[in-house]
Length: 300
Image 1 (cartoon, helix red, strand yellow):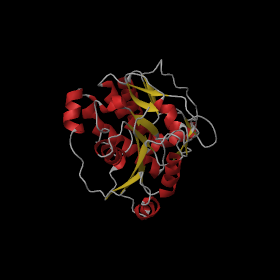
Image 2 (cartoon, helix red, strand yellow):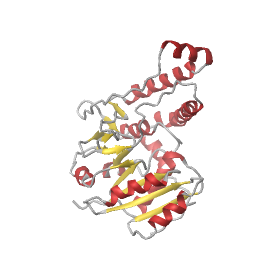
Image 3 (cartoon, rainbow, N blue to C red):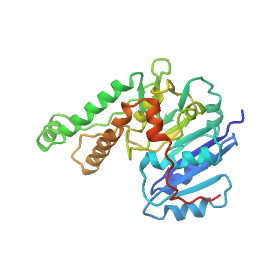
Image 4 (cartoon, rainbow, N blue to C red):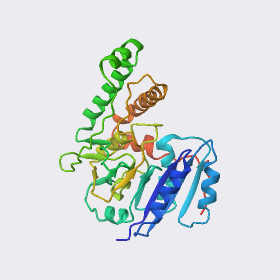
């Protein structure tokens, strides 16, 4: 077992969490890994702070984008570096606000299932309960249809009069149910905050779908897998702690921040539609062979 793992961490604004996540990687008992931090155009001093902390560590590469590229293109900077410069076998794409135990990589590498394109670990909230699975389905296009229906219903309920009626008869509450993952029943089980892209994935693709800025990442990843017959699974691991305390983003809300999330989600939907109805050769030709612009700085 001598696979090379590249860890891609996308930083935006909060470099303290990124540094804590990096410490989790550095504590791994499996040592054949590299870390790629993508500083995604933060308008604060994140790049300077990361540069100061990371420049002496030979296992870490810091890439800098001159603007916020969003989730997909930001991570793609790191993924492409991992494949083209480091020749990584696995790429671990993880949010900056997660921490994990020293045995995580060893546990994942013992998972030797054929036809698996994405492997997610077991994710918990900081207070100890399992986090609900981000995406769990065997019928990805039914999931897309139900999600689209939910988005348009959310826009309808954001109309002032309807929104008042909704909040008059229904008190806001957060949904916090830890749905068990079932790799036998569902074809696509994905935790969006942390997942491994496997050698099987890279036989077909070299990056994530690049056309969305924020949201729809798990669905787009599952659609990619569906075009090639690959699956996505979650495996039992030691806890991966995700600091995000919200178990469910409420799109129906009078607050401007939640309206902004709804707009981002709608925008991602329309940018994803062409890919949903394309076949695999068309996807690769249109979205996966173009080289990203090299407006980045690297250091070792």
